[in-house]
Image (cartoon, rainbow, N blue to C red):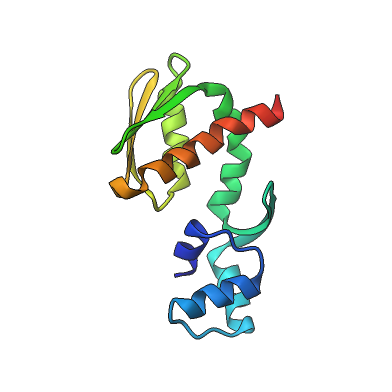
Length: 144
């Protein structure tokens, strides 16, 4: 449940996380939560929106944003799928990075030479997944 909450909500303090767990029906103490966070590899990082707890794989995502931003030319979506256009020959590498994020809202990717199809776990999540993928590309603007 901690992983699910961290993937779907911005939680910046243990108090926020405790409250979210309680809303989900879990009884948790501060000591137990601290131990669980350590065991899960959860880290607290500074984001443009403030401090936030993330899974270690999400911390890795922050490091990859700048690199992915240079590879992606544009992102388009409809109600069911996200299409990412990359520089020639870059789609397989970008798709591998997206796959390695193991984001719970992304069902999978298919990559050609310069095109990636991304399928969300639900059509109801397509816009949210497109926003996540766009955030990878927009990091380039902050770095450049």
